[in-house]
Structure formats: C-alpha cells, structure tokens
Length: 445
Ligand code: NDP
Image 1 (cartoon, rainbow, N blue to C red):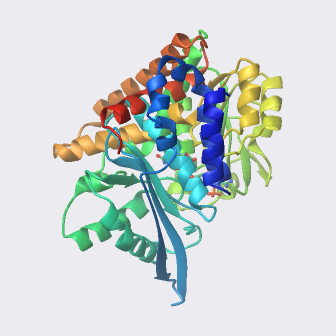
Image 2 (tube, rainbow, N blue to C red):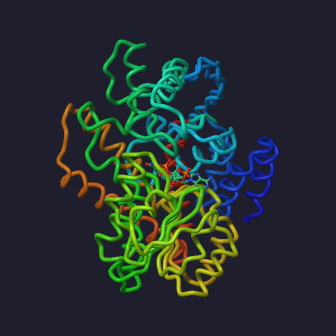
C-alpha cells in the first residue's frame, strides 16, 4: 500500500475497532488508490479519504415487537448514511442474525463507490437489523417491519435517504415498510423506498436486476477474451433473489448452471438448474433447497458442503460476504476457472481475490458486477418522480446499457492506470474519483 495512505488506514482501523468486514472493505479500496493521489495531491490535502471513511450519520435503534405467542422480542436496527456527495443516501436493508455495525458499515462503504460507478445521482448508505425472518410468520414479519419503520421513517425520504432490499428483505418486507411509512407520514411518497410491488410504484426488472446485471457484466468481461456465457459450466452460490436471477440470465445466454446453494447445503443438477422449480420452492413456498431435490430426478444434494467444490468455468458468488476463500479459489483455478462475477457484496476473501488475479482469471468485484440492482432502483426513482412506468424491454435495455457502461468505465480506468484487466483497481479508482471530485466541489462539510 502507498505509504501516504498507510497512516490514514491505521487511523481508520483504530477508530473502528472490532469491525472486521469494514476494515477489509477499507483496506481493499486503499490498496488501489496510491496512483490516484500521485495525480491528485489535492485529495490528500482535503483529507478526502479520512472524510470518506467516517459516515456522515449513523443511527442505531431499538426495535421492539411481539411474536405470535405474544412474547416481546427486541432487535437492533441500523441505518448508516455514509456519503451524500452524489445524491441522497441509497442502499439496501439487510435482515439477518449476523448483522452488526461492522457489516452495515462495510456494505455502506462499498455502496458509495458502486453507486458512483452507475453514473446515477445517488449517494451511499446501508441499514438493517439482526432480526431473522426465516421461520417467522407473515404476521410476525409485518409487526417487525412496522416497528422498524416507526423509528426509521424520521431519517429517510425521497431527497434524503432511500432504502431498498438486501438479504432477508424482499418484496414482502418492502411492502410492510412502505405501508407503515405511508401511515405515519400521511404521504404517498413512492420515491422513499425502492423494490416496491409493480402495481404500487415498483419498477419492472428491479427484482431481476442484480442477478441479470451480474451476468451482463461478466459477459462483457468474457468478451474481452473472445468468449461468452454460451457453453460455459457455471456454479452459483446462494438461492435467493440475486442467485436465482443470475441463474436465469446465465442459462438464457447458453450456459449450464450445474449447482447452487443455501446456508444448509448445495444442489448439483448436471442437466442445468430448473429455474421455474427453484422459484417455486424458494420464492413462492419460501422452502429450502432440499425441497428442490425431492421434486427433481438426477439431482444430488450435499448437506453442509461448500458449493465451490463443484468445478466450473464461471463462478458467480451470490450469497454473502467471505463465502469464497483462498483454498476454494485455488481449487477452482486448478480445474479450469475462466471468470468470477460477484453478485454478492465482498463474497471473495482477500486471499481468494489474490489467487484469481495471479492466475489471470477475469475477476469482476461486487461493487461493479452487482451494481445493476441499485442502478435499477435509481430507474425506479426516475419513474416515480415522473409518475410513469416503463416497459420490461425498455427497462432491461437501460440496465444492459448501464452494466456495459460500468464495465467500460472499470476497464478503461484500469488501462489508464497501467493495469489492464484489473477490474478491482478500475472499480475502486473509477468510483472514488467521481465522489472525491464532488466532495471537493462541495467544500468541507
Ligand atoms: P436473499 O436473502 O434473497 O438470499 C440470500 C441467499 O444467500 C440465500 O440463499 C441464503 O441462504 C444465502 N446466505 C445468506 N447468508 C448466508 C450465509 N451466512 N452463509 C451461507 N449462505 C447464506 O438475498 P439477496 O439475494 O438479495 O442477496 C445476496 C447477496 O447479494 C448479498 O451479499 C447482498 O448484499 C448482495 N446484493 C443484493 C442486491 C439486491 O438487489 N438484492 C443488490 C446488490 C448486492 P439461506 O436462505 O439458507 O439463508
């Protein structure tokens, strides 16, 4: 790392003890930024990095609710409003038992650069709770969401902060959150949340956008080597929103997706995952992958296994952070891996990224590859602002253009800084410079 940045890094790590994921995200970005500061000493003088690493505002709150047996439950809610240089804070809400401040801050920090790369007018933020929706009834999820919004509503708004979904927060949760916001504020403020239902202000393609966008970005990377998804053997981790739509798009482009997972195990389906059945099991019935296996022949299930034990030419990690480590990366590389497109946020450990880069594997980091979700959220905001709704085809074309544009921005920035093909460097520098320029222009705030 550049010596000038080391001191800033050490201060940031010391000021934020015990937040391992936030540290990881910060260090990864800092490692790319030395050459930028050679060209832009003004960024150092204005302490842009120190300011970027300190969220503009952090909110932590109690979320009391009652379960179906009438018992009082208490969870912790978070919203980290990280950076508003480019627009209102924008980023999802995650409901998962692992959520704590360090995870919300890593996600919010990454979101700043991701949102900048989309070219849309959105700042970076993230939130969530350690609430676990799994196994909870609809009524329990509704009461939790209503309580969560009863505090959150005072901090958000279409010009202030616009949350969306993430792990554990899909259309159902956004519906309950929006209903409570409307009830408290007496305003039908469509632009306050994205990921809404199609009939009440949502955008077509938003549910598919992160998974589709990840595949579009990865296809662009493959094209640089004269290749494409057609004929590839693909492994996808996870079986949630991002994973299912990545599987659907990869197969539409001619790949065979032979495996996917959830936190209990993974499925191998050499004929190619049946996306219709997977949607039925996971989205309609809210079941487990085991239920998929029971309904389809020629499929095997590995309980508690690691999906990265399955060979692939393209890997799409779409579950969660640090799910793909150096050992798994080395094994995939030995067995013919060509490309990795991160649908999840920071799913590859730093060791894994180093293995991919040393082996010359095409590696698309999440902040670029999965930006299609937030970009389409920004398209949802545009439709809300103009009280319009666009067709699927038009919206998908906008998403495709945005993803191709992000790929181009990352690739050309990597070329400009003398590291062709290094999408990590391209994404970090491309996102950072845009935010840093805006922060300089807006003065010390
Ligand atoms: P979902 O809740 O729809 O699905 C998450 C999937 O990942 C599930 O299959 C879940 O399995 C699995 N998973 C979650 N946590 C773990 C864990 N600790 N270990 C193993 N498996 C796990 O979430 P999304 O698909 O929306 O999000 C997936 C990733 O994509 C996240 O990293 C998210 O930040 C990122 N992302 C999402 C966007 C979106 O638009 N939704 C936008 C950009 C990024 P199980 O059901 O067993 O828990």
